[in-house]
Image (cartoon, rainbow over all chains, first blue to last red; front, side, top):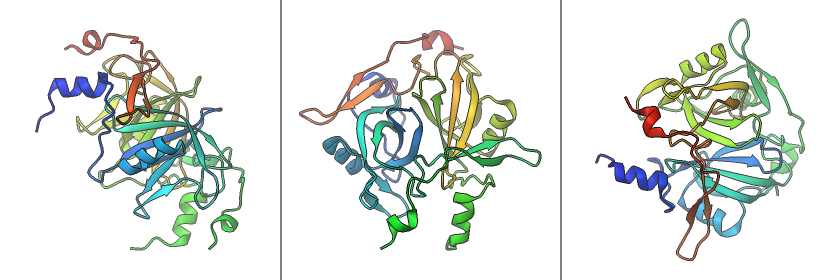
Length: 143
Length: 143
């Protein structure tokens, strides 16, 4: 079915919250640090994760690898308190500004984005940046 | 094929740039304003868009709707100069900090995230925030 221009107007200019889920029922969610503005992580939410995030004020996600709903910090204690939630023009991406308790990344770093991409002679290379570990993942995630 | 723990180590702790493209050959890219830290947009890059972004220092994306490579600002003039590019732990998401010329959103707003999501009585609702238009999209995108 073709998308009419009034559908687009409603999506882009309306005040109805109508997330456009992909074929797997997910939207992309970017979490940034409410203080520094740094991107902490990029993950996915399904309808239930969005509902619980709004209701609780803490971030819930849907894990594609584990195929399950996931309260951020449920194992590590590193929860995200949501300061503000926004949605983009076409309503297929969500941005949350959060107060991150501890570290967002399962590797122990504050942010999942602890490596910089730079042009090199034989192609792009990575280098570590802001890569100090705030916790030891082996200690936190052991069963 | 199962992913071995040494593959994971290399992906998460190595310095090789090995983006993990999805079935459509894409990774998610988040662009933030290098000054304010605001998320400007969430889009996708394929291998060629990444290559051109690194080579030119300006953001290129892949448009899923138009099925084509796309230099940000090629129509509007609102280019993004890349200050820094990072990749996340599992190398399936890219974060670029950019100097945005003009506005990032095709609706004329500085950021695509110009609406806030808030809990309401009959479910979540949106409200406009930072939603001033910096340009008139009808004037910029007319042919």
